[in-house]
Amino acid sequence: MAGGTSGAVDSVAVIGGSIAGCAAAVVLHRAGARRVVVHERATAELADRGVGVAVHTERCAELLAAGLLDEAVPWEPMRVRHWYVRDGSSALGRVVGSQPLPFRAYGWGHLWQALRARVPREVEFRTGSVVRAIAAGPDGVAVRGTGGEERYAAVVGADGHASLVRDHLHPGLTPSPAGYPAWRGACPEERLRGLGDRADGVCAYVVFDGGHMVVYRIPDGRGGRLVNWVLYATVPGAMAASRTLDAAHRERLDEITDELLPPFWGELIRRTGPDSVFLQRLYDVTAPRYSSGRLLLLGDAATVARPHTGAGAVKALQDVAVLESSLAGAGSWASAAGAYDAARAPVGRAMTALGRRLGRGLVEATPAWRAQDGAALDSWWEELAGQGGFGGRELAR
Ligand SMILES: Cc1cc2nc3c(=O)[nH]c(=O)nc-3n(C[C@H](O)[C@H](O)[C@H](O)COP(=O)(O)OP(=O)(O)OC[C@H]3O[C@@H](n4cnc5c(N)ncnc54)[C@H](O)[C@@H]3O)c2cc1C
Image (cartoon, rainbow, N blue to C red):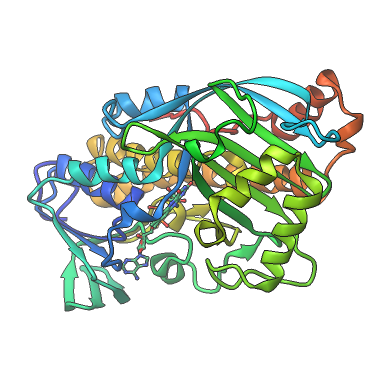
């Protein structure tokens, strides 16, 4: 490929301008790409739509060193995970086990904003730019969308779980629904004042038959905090169709809030406000190959693992870090893309498998929570997650 200063990169279209897309634009520019254009379909400010992202402290250190995380982004510390079950009128419930949980809790919008701010001026970042089709040939890729048709030497698919680039690389490979959704919300902490005494640094796993809720604090960006929560449970006979809650998902959330959660955690959902709660549909999919010819996949476009893994954003940023190191050591796009695929596709497969295992243990076939004690809980968790990967695998570059 003709070209940039690295010899491996010429002109690249990055499809998607979220976490993976912004980070990819940064490293492609650092690798000497002559021209980088980011096509982002959204016109509204992405930063306003996110809630919380938990990042393992060891993965944080690796991503800070790779120049893909910014120490200035605000975060809240997590140190320990308490597992709570409902226990009569006890506000928080009873703790059936505790484990170390060294994570940083970020606001998604702050992470995205910091990455967006790092995208150099030389990169063309187009919002409201929808890519509708791509056609890859031996000499380059035609990209058709809002701006008409343009040609690039390569295309990076950072276009999320319903990736058009993945469809092109692997026709017929469709994300398989997990079979249950996540309800998400973030409640200003002051709305909970006086309801229960919670120490700083605690991540709560509030568990019940058929599901659980994960709760941790994130910065609100104005000096205060939000209490971020995500709740997973099956909804017999109903499938989530959009971010908005339909009657079946409202009813199930009400039932869990009123009957299955300890009072404090139910009140957290109520005080978040019904209009601020949204649904996230969950999928499993992993591309058998992360690159072929002039097309390459990153982040959720490459692999979607269930959020129980605590590693969606980490996985996306690790993909980008490995793309950068692969480009640095290669004389051509083809050899860089091959090295990238060899390093990252197995990680994607492992993360999807972990997400399925955790989904089974935490939602689909939950243990008798009330009968657990600390030791039983530790060995149950070890069986589910002991092969590693919770919070992301170690970054090998
Ligand atoms: C607005 C937003 C808020 C989020 N909030 C959270 C959160 O709070 N917590 C959390 O854990 N995860 C959140 N996520 C998901 C999280 O970013 C991903 O799971 C993970 O970080 C991997 O990111 P990604 O960039 O690969 O994919 P995504 O974040 O899904 O980004 C894909 C991007 O591609 C764009 N796109 C897709 N198709 C096209 C097309 N044809 N043409 C142009 N653009 C296209 C989308 O608009 C989107 O911005 C959020 C994602 C988005 C988009």
